[in-house]
Image 1 (cartoon, rainbow, N blue to C red):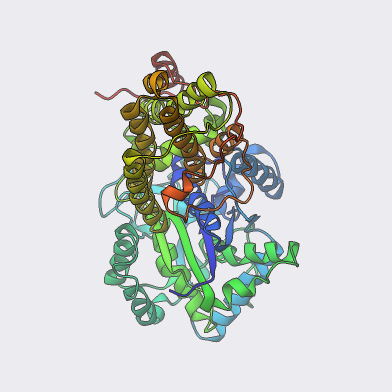
Image 2 (image 1 turned 180 degrees about the vertical axis):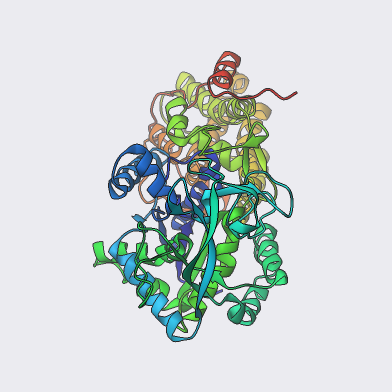
Length: 568
């Protein structure tokens, strides 16, 4: 793969409410860790995200809040931005889907699809809520899934079995807005994209992704193709959204799932318009030969990004950049049950950073990322990982090494002695682990990467435990100098390797060693060179605790406060 630029996108979080930890680990945090890692390797990265703002959910939420929908979206966009800053997400640009740039891109793509014959007009029967006096968007109709019996299936898709639904498929359908079952089916005219006509081209493209995409992404896409693609309605009877740019449909707006993925392009144009000195948006989306495009999202978003969005771009006939690698994630559950934004179940990201530093969450979430299957959050598991990995392994190593060196040699890298067989064995082992860690990060195998990072920290503790510098210094000060000098050099190494996952902690570690965190670069030399970077006499600062243990009392109090149910 001879690519020079890396385009990285996270699924666009919906504006309605604030993200919880499931959203954070499902797309936002993994994309940030990968973007940071790629930048440290010297890659040319553009990392894009933004708030998804159209649709009935925004209209209804604004109505309940008693404010205009635009004002509602403006407010929540700022709240999202603050949360992402608190979690240290390093977007090159955080945009919005409701902007003029995205409207321009949506109209451009819609016009090309229409010109190429991929639009079809249909008069359809749609659910109308008499009590709410409006047509109901698919997601605002809830009922029992006819395929699996899940009682909270939405009108567009069942979250349980992932089957695509029409609202009229639901059993015991009701309005999610009011709970009313006084629903009627009325006729209304809409535009459909003819996915069936694009299936052969889409199928050929997807087949090139076999064995390269994660199973969770590839299998969902293949399931849709096997079932056969159907025409998909891309307009809605709403006011909030982009008015359809086609005669006879001016009273409709584009469906949020049509303009939201196009938002990646629109947001890139926002970035380009605001930073004209940077490359044009076309360099990333319409001149794709030197761009490697990676998307991150939860598995519920996979069908739209493996089927409808690529098909939409293909149908234009233009040379749009299609995703090269899609990192689909399973779900993070809350003590075995679902996080829920609508039902306020779980921990939301604004609450999380008030309880503990962002790096605690970043480390735990990536170490337990729901990659091949769902993973569960409990406060007990969270505290155990923070206490063992961050306090007892990483924090303990740094604190011991700095204190021992200070008490025996002062706050400088000590001189004396020559490295021996144990140092050489350490270099070999660290080379192996760093190579594995780099490989897993490149492959976006985050749980394996974090497990390997912990192994690297453990090697530091094992080295100290084997060599016992607190004893050796009493009889052989030069040998003690070698041990502590080697251990001191591990601290900036650990800082560099930890930086994509724990940027604040990495910066603190480097400051302890009087080093700058600016322009961090990945470890490229072998460990024998890396562990000699601090020169003899280099001064370091007094040790300070990087982490605090989470007590059993704290765990119990948090579980009660966040209504964590006990396993029975």
